[in-house]
Length: 225
Length: 233
Image (cartoon, rainbow over all chains, first blue to last red; front, top):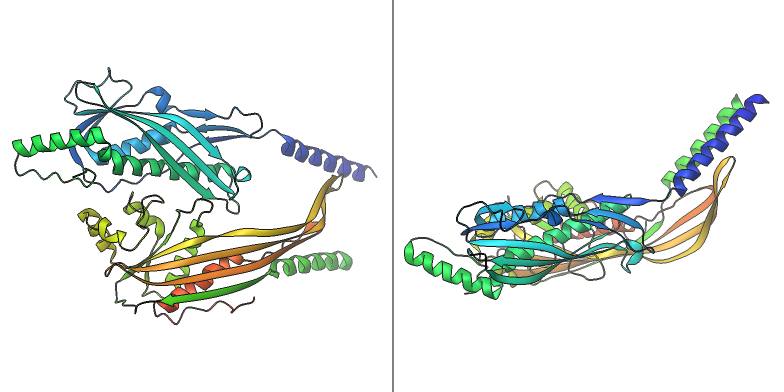
């Protein structure tokens, strides 16, 4: 009889433990991780100084709305990695600093300062198509060698991924984030030269380079002819 | 002792029966061919998902499945994995930058670097797969309860799933549309629950994949690809 009572107590304890695990409030934490391939673009023969402040490199989104699940999403490391890969492929020389004033003392043709203005996401139970969606809005500023503002534009990026069997919420949202960051990288790599002010600047530089060094081949498909 | 073994044997039989059960799927395949296929030894095919739809997403696992079934069916058919191809040609085959029409290929290939990379792969055909799998109807209910002896569920649930995919085949060398293959699969899954829920799942997406790969195999002149069981399973 004592043996059965002991078993019964153990089963009750196990069930209570399971109940506690199920009822524990769930906070999802995501540290976005991804591999970003090197873009296939013609490298421009200019040096660029990239300003990535701590608010950019440590960007973290904490869900504040009470009617949504709790999420703590760290994007800073992944977006820093993406800018590093993309800009290194686009420019012959890249220097990074936390502010314009702290830039290394060397000849730099352009300064580039990105900032993440808006971050939005949806999880499957919030979308009609049962997908993870991420929307990013960046403000991109480019300064000339004298640190005068040359161009200031908005670039949005979007990523979505379907739900899959045995895929956790964190994995699903991470995948959508990586797709959105790849979309951002595509936008920078392919549209940088199409921003009118930058296009003008690149044309002038190209003419100057061709005048000083005749055989130099500088043929970038991203510049409007 | 015998009673104990009989009980275990019955339980094992029920589990084996449940594992062997699967729902029914109906698959319809169709194709249009505009041109003859010209594949020589060493030529490659790349299967890529079209992801420009706003309210659905072509599943990466479906694309991998089609590629794997095609590649396994015939070792002479070189199928390039989607991820390798898209990463190597980043950012030109991303959802918002990929060529949507065959004539866009000419514009893309005017950039020497991209043309050289695609030539390295010896790509002859590019297969774009567009579509998705979704649950179309669900009914029934299952309720689970926690008691001193454990968790127990009772009820019955059923749902319909539909897969619709269309593959568009481009000839990379001639920059022409070669043809289209479509695969539509419908299936109903069931989940009776008497203490333990027993899922009887219809493998709709997997059957749509096999059907698409079979038809693509035929399209590219491969007759040895195993045909999925026709129409009903």
